[in-house]
Image (tube, rainbow, N blue to C red; front, side, top):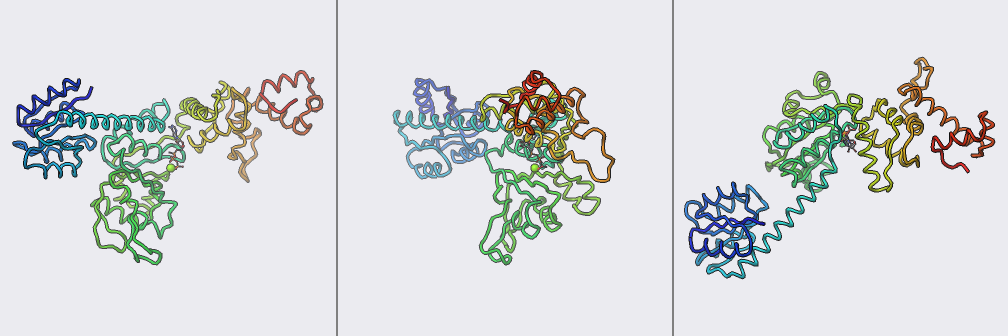
Length: 459
Ligand SMILES: Nc1ncnc2c1ncn2[C@@H]1O[C@H](COP(=O)(O)OP(=O)(O)OP(=O)(O)O)[C@@H](O)[C@H]1O
Ligand SMILES: [Mg+2]
């Protein structure tokens, strides 16, 4: 049931409108002037406003402005009497949904109210759907550090404070930044990302602040920068430690004043932008080395968020695995599971590329293996191929290949056995009898191992 707030100084109008709307099963709240109306707007959270433009104490136009400021989506139907039509037209220009002339026509009133509430519920549905989509970007994990991160993100989202997100590669820095944006009041505004490390030094300033035509050789036309593009929303400065000294100096000034000029321009541009920065560098080391301005660091680091590496929270590995498997199942069909031994191997692995590496790995497993329950053999086999296990030159060669060293003995044995069988099968054209002979096994014994490891392609 929608609640409608009726603001009019004429008691007769208030009563008539209330009766008409209550007959239509709307809940009606009334107010006799602008101040009382605004108060009711705050306390009752109505879905729709019917507002007289001429009101004592605080004029209708002013009330409309205030309400739109507090809730830009609120629909307001304006009532105008004789001689105030101009104001009503003006009100529509300022975002009123419709205007009705006195004396009120019941039909016109009802049509307008129905249309406005229908639009309002469409909007609400739209917001709900957007939220559902956003759920998709949830930060998954049940470990203490990740719970703490989620709380920090929710707190940060409630304010406009600058946030500096640090942490190694693939720990979810960008995900965290997007989440802060999506949960905050700027969610409907733009989220503009700038990868400071990916933009050539000579272009970074123009990229951020824009330029006027002719500002430099290649500036053939005026261009708005990312700061302007992010107006009303969030600017995400990724890899911020890689900014050039000149860009750092200009950024510092912009953060102090929230205004700037385009390159080669005179006009001072004012923006309403929330800045979130991220880096995987050790920023104190960058400051100590004179590569990053300390004053800029203080400006950016109002709310520090440090994303912990996956190796500090191995208990999140299983949760993340099932999350990624479930997401994959949405597109690939049948959901897979991971055997307990395989999960043990995944937990034990150090994940130098953190969540990104884990996510890619799970995707790879699903492509490369057709097991419904992914086995330890498969996991260890592909973990060994991640390309990170090549022994470095000059170091003593370990007795056990590196990909085994993090495993429990049983998982390592399985991995070895499966790899050996696969290798011999390939060499023998997948002929079981010949492979069994080469391995010194009875064919029936080989068959059961092939089954155990879910090896495909065998006749
Ligand atoms: N806690 C998490 N829950 C779900 N997905 C995650 C989580 N952390 C990271 N991811 C996913 O891992 C991938 C890498 O995350 P993201 O790009 O945010 O990392 P990053 O810290 O910005 O990495 P880089 O330093 O390499 O830029 C993304 O696909 C992201 O959705
Ligand atoms: Mg990133």
